[in-house]
Amino acid sequence: MTPPPPLTALSDLDAQLGSAGYAVLDAASLFRLALVAPQQLASWNHFWDELPPDAYLRDGGRYRRRRHGSFVLDGEQLAAVPHRAHWQPLDYNALHGGFERWFEPLPEALVADVAWPRLLQALGRCASALRGAQRWFIEAHAFRIETGSEGIGRPTPEGAHRDGVDLVAVILVARRNVKGGETRVFDARGPQGLRFTLAEPFSVLLLDDARVIHETTPIQPQDAALPAERDTLVLTYRAGGFQDAA
Image (tube, rainbow, N blue to C red; front, top):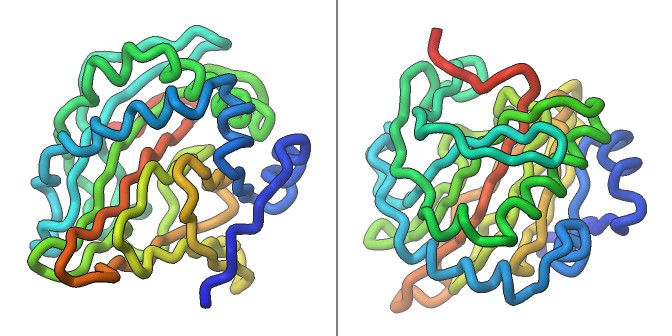
């Protein structure tokens, strides 16, 4: 059986992230960190029902739906930037790196929700505690991994990886009829690692991307007669600018 997440007390968050390179918060801690009510984030769930298919999967799969948005956080001032492509170098994503991926933008109603800037600002403060206060270039990815007719879905088809940023936040939005989907975090410099399964909606894994690599194992349906879905919101924070093709 997969161990439960190694939860971090909110008061220990900065120290845990700085020393270990990762931290896991339960939903109640995320709500306190972002100063939002549970129902505010729960009201976002329907946006994941409207995600379009990911047209860029190079393994030929049809198991991922996705939207993407970009923002700049300067102090507490959050601004959306004009819609742009998501790009990663091959060094960080051997499967999908090296070319521009123009995903559909995030819904305007999501970005306009009062809880949206609070969440991004709160995690920006975590990034500044880790790296020092500065302007943060944020990419937001709304994912749905589903099993469909193939019977399997792959949250990280590229395998264990880093994202080429400073801070990664993986927020579990929902998990329905799923087995698998185990999170694995490894020290980038050696074999040390841990594994667990995020199961509570709006629990979050925070990662120091320079120090750890991460992956999530494939999902399958518990009941093959019903849909299986794993919804996440992944937020990445990078100093110095967005990753863009040369």
